[in-house]
Length: 468
Ligand code: SF4
Ligand code: SF4
Image 1 (cartoon, rainbow, N blue to C red):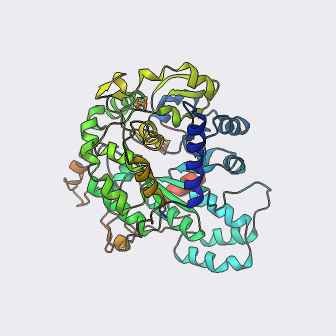
Image 2 (cartoon, rainbow, N blue to C red):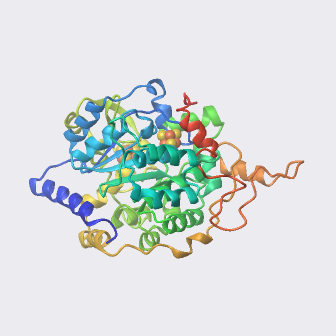
Image 3 (cartoon, helix red, strand yellow):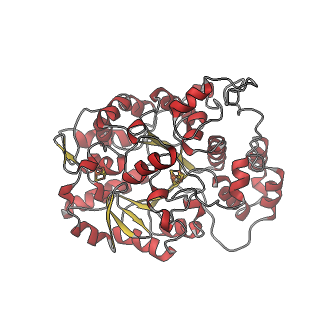
């Protein structure tokens, strides 16, 4: 099966239950933001900019769990900010699992290995030695990590353990060069790959999470799918970028860029996603085939942003994950008080001009699952997509030149490419040479946790965000 049976069955049962009850609006996925602090400042991220005045604030653990219980979404995407910075992330994940929810930890990957080492230490037993030796031989842990793991962990706090109900959802926007450019930090892609490898060896479920921008090369995205499929990831989320206000202002002020140079219009989205259905057959792409048809420009959908609500330090954010017209104290109050008819695009006409170019998954993916704009055969299509065999691992993924050099410039591919085309006096064009063979790491980088400067900085604690 493409997705684990228990997960698909849980979501299907939730939808059927509400359809039978004729519930007009209900939640499918909760976007839970326990904090907005982040160790990165990715280009295009509106979160750390919109909430720049409350970056240090945390949603208390009991409020996070109460929000999940109130909206009763079967899936919770724990995002942020960087959720692994949340001091009680382990307790939060344990609490959500105890509520029988499917949990996605949406992370930039930098702290993942730290959390997995804590899991290994807390559960250490002699029969783990072969796994530890394998992790060490692949340079995913260092000698000092081995020592610490063998000593164990006895602080009594929970750890994030592998579970069929849990996914690491790792932010990756391209191969090494592009991804590091977008996250505005060298070494992050390498760290993500190391974290994914380690997670798969330990037995976690892992997905990737990609945003497509105007300058994204779709061929590169396909190569990225091949590479991560070969690494054994369990699925991919992909969504077009959106020019929401906070990100727009940041583009102009901090980077001196015009948002229209970076984000997609509807027409461009359709062009970029022309092959999404093909990707859906070749790779384990999350989301419904109906949403994929929408992205490919083959049909219209109505926005159902209420089905993927966002809860954060200010309350329930409306109307959607991206746009903020207000915050509400409860999910129910938000459902009742927001005039949902004001939003989305219907028959090609934007009800709100800010929705005009939006085709993002948090507005339209649930529409495909809920049967809005239903066409005959849609239910069968969705059923078949979920329950049919999973696409095989892409065996030739090792041939992908994933480590294609560190980036230069700040979040703008055209500028960086121009810089690459101009060799410096030393002959170094600003990009480390590509690896001699596929699957190796760029330059002489040592992948052990202590060697990657991104990890060294991260393990020293989160740096204050440059945002705002
Ligand atoms: S990792 Fe990047 S996209 Fe995610 S919250 Fe941090 S800055 Fe934003
Ligand atoms: S179309 Fe929906 S998801 Fe997109 S910006 Fe408008 S309200 Fe938000």
